[in-house]
Image (cartoon, rainbow, N blue to C red):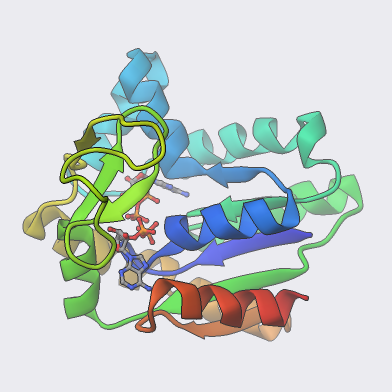
Length: 213
Ligand code: ADP
Ligand code: ADP
């Protein structure tokens, strides 16, 4: 299964991605997670990416495309993958098409999750992430059993630097300007699955899983 998850910041892509990759046993490729891991390790890529991410802007296409292409070349992607947060521009989508064509493979579906701006802001602001395993919670919608502590491994939960009202608002505008054109791009190819992201987490997952099965 070769899937792309498309949708505005905070809509629930990462949350659904964890469920999807478990069910279909495919690798989860999140460009945001790759950049955050590089920031944590203090790599050159991390330092460059942070400058854009803190402002809510996209990291330049050439950097993102080469990282994803390298990741797709790994053995674990041979039978499928889930791309989360990539592509995010038409240039990235064209680069992905080119890469997949060269490998003689095709995407099976582009899962497009959407919700209104006020929901996106509320979700992103309340998002909390485990420092150790990256599991995502929400202070009210999906709280951990003990405040500030991951249910899975007891790790401390943190808030992303870019999950402030100001930066999330910029990220939503960047999404509307640069990523929204991909909805038509993939709809024309007959790949798009429209999903109502306002529903509870489990319901969104059943809609996606029923359509993929
Ligand atoms: P994205 O990867 O699209 O930015 P996340 O999956 O990280 O979004 O979700 C953003 C926040 O919203 C998290 O705190 C998550 O727990 C919460 N969330 C995700 N899906 C839902 C949902 N369907 N209903 C309510 N809250 C949700
Ligand atoms: P969200 O789904 O909440 O927007 P992500 O974790 O997917 O968050 O992305 C966080 C930031 O990482 C983005 O605001 C952007 O700066 C950078 N980023 C992630 N993926 C891409 C991409 N495909 N192209 C350019 N920048 C990206």
